[in-house]
Length: 100
Length: 464
Image 1 (tube, chains in turn orange, blue):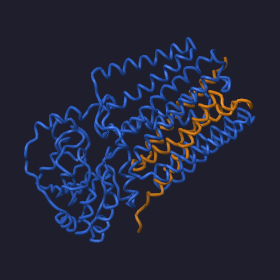
Image 2: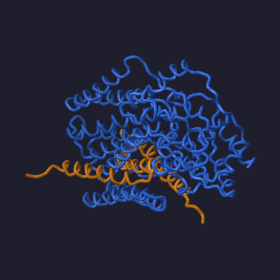
Image 3: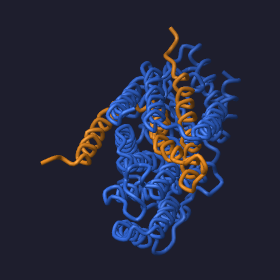
């Protein structure tokens, strides 16, 4: 009997929750704000779906109803990706050790 | 590019995202971690272009919109002041939520593009996954908008409650489940749209009863939701990177909510059901009695601190509001010149989001190895000469340890009262968010400094 590919995806999902659990507990509390902004940025990898949706138009009809949703989603996710990573970078630059 | 090859690349991005979070375990490795995250994102996007293969006429528009969104994001990231970080994060969460909804909508309208079947006959599993993604995404969107408005001060931070609120939320929750079930049976698009609309409404209703100081929990919770929404869409699109990321972000937000609830000694449900403070404020107003308070000025404070051998600074949300972090740093610098040992004590729920105070202090160039968490520093108060409480209130209230009747009883608090003297910068004697009087104000070793946090600190700097 063959295993449904869904089960594989579910396994990845559940294992990732465990990985996330241990990785996040090891994040130092002083970096909790950068943690939120970086998780925000990486969850915008949803842009993958938006790109697929946007590229589905035919040559005579680039802006189909479903494509328009895709294009808007690209803008939203792109704001998040660039905004999220850059603001995280900006914050992390500020964390400095005592000068001896 | 073959589906197998792109799946492997998506796996690599997923691993890079894990490394990005792993980097945050210490400030030294965190910057490198962020680059891993950026690399993962870059790989995902490029692989997606190649896996679609036939670059239709849409490609140029995709690049245009990508650049447009990217420039807006970059602009915001460089312009935003650090004090506005909580509302920025809330705003970003709303965008992830809305993007998830839009991707779900386009998958529903054109399932053949994603290999999910055809309109009117979408695979059952995909339908469940996309409707969950859309529903959670919509809740994240509208909930984050409300959180944003509250944090920004456009909407009042006080809880909005009405009769039958919990019952209404519960029935709407059940309605969402029913709509998902009905959608799977009927495949009707009107059901799909209703589902999205009801979810938007639930997001609003969930967040309005939650008050300002509970925002750390709310932001973490919405962070978690945005992850689950992404995971739902990841299952729909059968995309490993998205599934891994969704799980990471989902558990990250859940852990942060847990830490925040623990910091207030409240259960998650107690926070979510909302309405703390709103009722308590009335009772505290009634029991208000005139007790003697020692009132001091900047010179007294400067004198006390100059002659101390160790000082602990306890910042709270008030410091963020007054933007006093730079003034505090200046004060600490001149204290250090006088040979005073200074450290900072941060309560887990100080401020409006997890780690809020740490970011502000880092912005003011405070080295992170002078900043300590509650458990690390709480025993040091007994040996410290002066505790300088600036903009914090409930998190220092000794009542949490002594009075089982108090609403904050059992909450971990900073043992400020154990230090030889306490300087309490506050505008008035008004109670904090929990709506209860702070016992600390009336202690013999407490000196109240009634002023704006920034002005007072600047005056102290002058007299030092």
